Image (cartoon, rainbow, N blue to C red; front, side, top):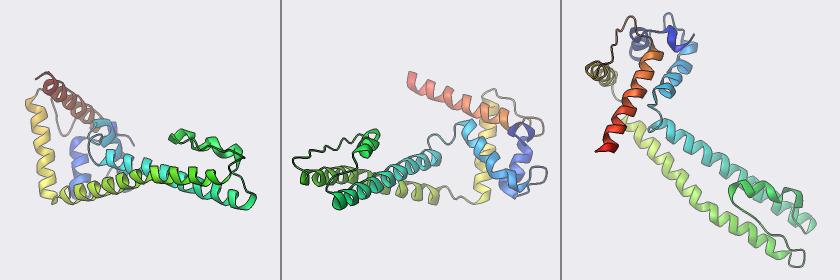
Length: 190
């Protein structure tokens, strides 16, 4: 099942009435995500926050594990795992190892940990922003339905022809994306 297989009316039944007949509840989340991605609606909203949170979480987990690993190796053998030193370069950190001053390596690890604290703060800010957005964007179904219908009306007024029984959701998603790009271009030119 693809977005091109679903009409606007069928999509609205799934979205607002939780009536998945002809779509299948097991397909719904994937199809809805495709709609958000294809329409570009997620680029500035929750999807962008989810991506940012995911990226920071992965970064912080890797760096925390790396620092713990190197610290344990250093305490066990008196030196870092030399071959693994470059693994953290992709995150902009370049710890130095000088065999004549081994104790300075632990200071290098502490510097990395200190620099990463700003990413913990940023992660907390993104999580808070997402939480706030979700509180705001949990409208009653009536309000969400009204917003969706208003969007369809705006698109129709702006020249996009939408027949709820004939227009498929892939077409609608592309119309939404194009309309958004047109609005951005107009705003940039003013």
